[in-house]
Length: 106
Ligand SMILES: [Zn+2]
Image (cartoon, rainbow, N blue to C red; front, side, top):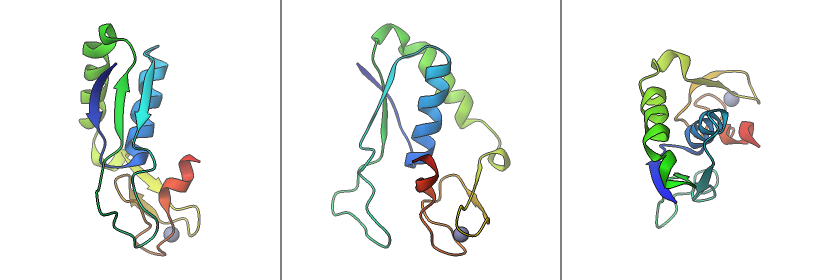
């Protein structure tokens, strides 16, 4: 197991995980519940972490993550399920109505 990156948000981590899985790289998500509830700042803030299961996948996985990070910001938006407003993917709460955006990822 090797840590490949810390994601800015659970959504970002989930996207990276999907990308890695599509490339047949076994990956795990840690700290997925690290981000607190609405208006709640956890005392020890931890970011979601993406790890590759096989060390031999590390370089390939890192290239995928790098490519994702270079994706233009305008293609990295998320739509609020509550009000339909567009939000940057790194937002955890809808700027308009305050609904939790990570709920989109189940
Ligand atoms: Zn909203």
